[in-house]
Length: 192
Image (cartoon, rainbow, N blue to C red; front, side, top):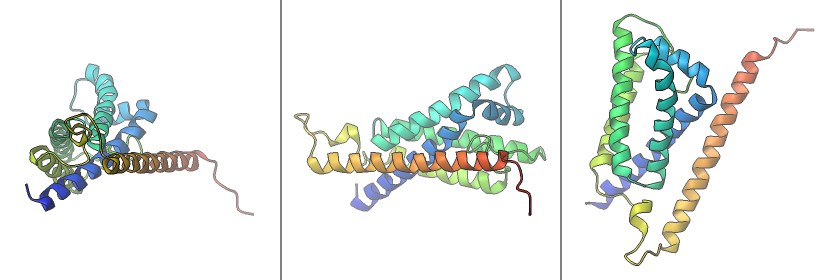
């Protein structure tokens, strides 16, 4: 496979990893809020809403982790493709119903559903499908070890730097969400 295609797959893999981990963390931090978001879509039977709200962010986190580390990256990308298509369909169904609800993309802190979000999810699904069919991308844990089980110093350093970078980025996202929640719950300042 051409080097440019493999580089594109690697870049998209890391982008998708960031998107999925960023989407999962707020949902895990505010489970009750995400239950309300899932219920608002009115697609699942009521008895399935709580379990879906528990499963979705865990699947997103698993996809993000697998894509980041390159563990079964093709399978993770395939699951990501299906999940993104389901999200796009759920948003489109509710838009066709004329409903104005929060998308739930980042848990209970999100934006109203729109056709832009449908297009974004379809575009991300296309990127995930590309990653699923592209040749084994570089910097994948399941491909960097040599036949004797050793890992090159360069690949190990690249994986470590990437993992640290994503962990820092995720911390910033979580802190930004917490700060937004604190600011929205703070009493209004009195003008003196």
